[in-house]
Image (cartoon, rainbow, N blue to C red):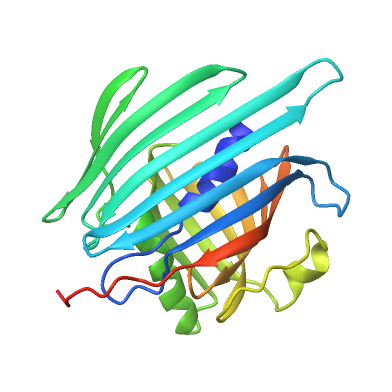
Length: 261
């Protein structure tokens, strides 16, 4: 399950909303492989569907993988996310369903900002829990907007705090570093490239627990981030296992016409 959830975090730790957001609603499909080689075995698929209305964002994600650990033992992992985030970025509600070889785990929760406090309330199979997040923590749908704005301002290296609903149910500290142009394209051919409109940046991101920053990083992510918020050519490295994801299908959608707030 650790392999899957690290990939989940890579997809969900960065997504934007709020006034002036760069993110565009879209539906993206990915093919997942175990390793970085061009002939690395396919282990599954991922679909991310992001829609928007005048109230905020609605994110649905479906990831399915099957890994042959031995000739007689296969690891079947699945995860589904259904999340809604207010346009203001002040509240998030989410529901996740994950399973490993048929053993299911369901989590639901909400994060709300009231004044200077950012409070999380999460219900897991182990029971409910409540805690305060670091005040600078951004909702999942506001963090990529922050990253894009910093990149547009020519910041080549910077940190960001982002709430994660699927892996740790807490804040991630994400250290963002821009890579040299062309690095990701030269690493693996992967699937036939999908044309994505707009400017993009090759990035290396390191993920650490935001409330306990003395720990070692949980994983790293290399990806091509477009100014529409679309991610492509993802490589997630946990230190033990590496998973790659290439964009295979992309449908861009028009954002709604909403009154300014």
